Amino acid sequence: MTRLQSAYLIVVFLILTLSPLVHAQDSPLSRCKTQAAAKSVVRILAHWPGHENPIPGTGFVWGERGQIVTALHLVVGADEVIIEFDGSNRIVKEPSHSLLDADLALFTIDNAPEIPPLLHRSGNTNSETAVMIGHGYDRSIWSDVAMRIRATDNLQLRHILGGQARDEIRELGFPSLRVPVIDLEGNAVPGNSGAPVLDAEGYVIGVIQGGLEAGSTGYTWAVPASKLEELKTSKHRRVLGSSQTPEVFFGDFNFGDTRRAKQFRIQADRDAQNLLVYIGTRDLRQLRATADDQLGLAQLEAIFRQTGRQIHSDAEFDLYADQSSGARVVVPAGVDLEIDKDRIEYQRHNGDLLARIRITQVGSTNEAQQQSLSVEQWISSHVNVSNEGWRGDPNWSNISACTYPNGSVVRRVAYVRHWGLRMTGYAFATYAHKADQFLDAVALQIPNPESEIDQYSFDREWVEMMIATHLTSYSH
Image 1 (cartoon, rainbow, N blue to C red):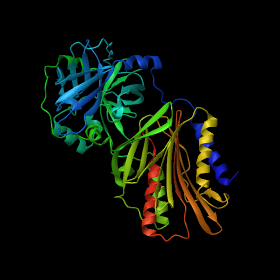
Image 2: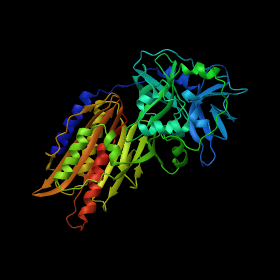
Image 3: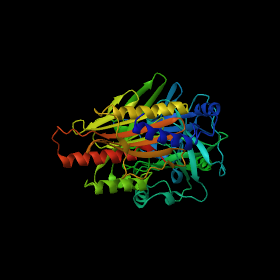
Image 4: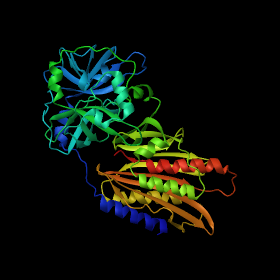
């Protein structure tokens, strides 16, 4: 066994010990109840003037037969709205009721399918977890996402928005910055606006409205279900649309125009398909502020300075989201991704710099160990000398596993390899384990002594790859 194998098995042992193979943030609803509730969830497609593609969203049957609740910001300026039931569509022009303060819209459909409405709970929930059911990323099939409730009591929208976001909301004219909200932690994405949030008994406790996506992690809020009764009695019907839409609404509108050009399907096997979707480009300043391990990122930047490598704060990174796992994949902006079954790869500087990201399902400790060993084998396969000599980089001391409220356990390690006095390889890796998902992201440097390189561009590209690997993890 090589030193890298020994070191890596210790890493895997610690991760598996700290993160047992159970759903730490599992859905509070049973699968049977979730499937029953999903029958009442519909897909919303709003056709806005000036947008090539419809704006995706979610709605749900509530109240009386044919009544559909969704987010007002999705439909307020649309020429027409398509509501997709299971097997049939309805086209509507305007909501029968709208509640500006809470960003809610209610459509009434004639001759609607007989679908049981969801029931709501008006008071505060005592539960710490909930489940959202929606059509994220404009997918025709629904998905359920476990959410952790951060806060509900006396929390208003203005409390969780920054100054720029508050200004955008004021310019739009709704919702009220004083509307009560439920602060949520979970993987809400474009297309989930208007989705119901349910408690352990299957009652609607909130409606997904928006989120902040300033960096590699996100924050989500919902309007409490108590606002549904106000919506039903509201006298407002139609509201004049706005040509501007705040970015706090998940980037729903940007996603509608970019999803075809910026999405990849990764076919892992016949029964599982992950959807990796581009969600934006951020600079290092934004990403640094939202990193899950800011201490580790600071140490990584200190290592760069010690070795004479310059850090460019204006460096940009592309962010992708994996729909099924909630993972956020970060890569240097503009790199060409190669998709091969269950992995994502890219290379820079004529192949001297390689990176790979995998998101795999693990059903047992043994399966997780096999996945981890395959990472070591991939690293070693690119070094054309003896496998001996790998060791932990003594400059990287931030090796403790970090456990997060969403149930993920993340550990980052750095390996260096020498052949005599010459460095023959360097690898930096992020290993993240959440429930039955195992994520590994590796950046690998393979110096070629025979190649002539531009040291400045080489160092800059390597720094960006290591930072991207450090930032790749699960959304917190």
